[in-house]
Length: 321
Image 1: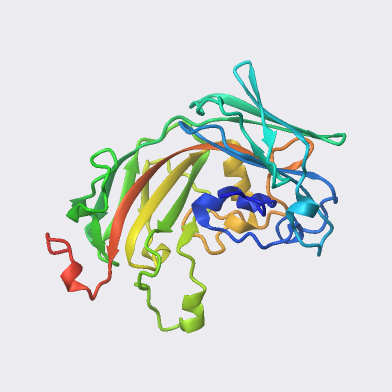
Image 2: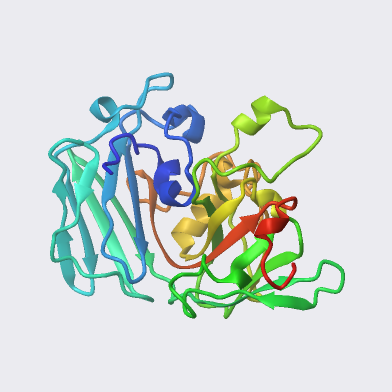
């Protein structure tokens, strides 16, 4: 899918969090950033091909953000790594969208990549050092009182079809789901939870929620930035609102990605879950010379599981949980 409207930096986590694309730049960056400043958006994921890059520019506060007025076409965009430079090509339909060359390599761990954008006398550059590869070692269900392990989930290392195995079916709010991993060389972590079954029923219920509140729930959510020195993450149940299949993605992120989400109002705890909130920052930390935005990197691993409503006894896993 082409990303014609991905012209604000908050959209860097689009595939992770499902954030809105409808904000103007003043809502994210405030009103003190000059009009016409380059905005870059590019995220590298270890062991995946070089990504597309979005190049935009800030517009006057109150103006709509569209590809025609905020997209920057005809720029010279390139990514360099280990002495090689890969020139990007502007999309034929979307001014802001730039594609890597067909022979671009996959992203390596623990490697420096440099982005360069040149447009009409403006130059923006940024560099990222990719994290090491990240792997979820174990995923377990804990007893809420004793914290003893009551079940071990199957991971993608165990089976590609994690949704079909009975041990990956968990009854809503019964036990604590914990992912365990070996800490790696990374600035921090971010988590995304994706509900995969469109139309699956709500499992979240609360007296203070009405029909309008339920209508505002998103099936995808993301966390603020957080540290995990002990190599574990517990998924709070309030991050889950729907029954059915879910994917939990843990991103081990570089300094640029970590700084941005740590200091951005979008990920400072407003609607996210857990982590260290980035409160009271005037602007996000962009780490882009000559512009704003983010050029960052991450490695990622996923866990798949099925959420079963508490009152659906016919769907409970065979071990009786």
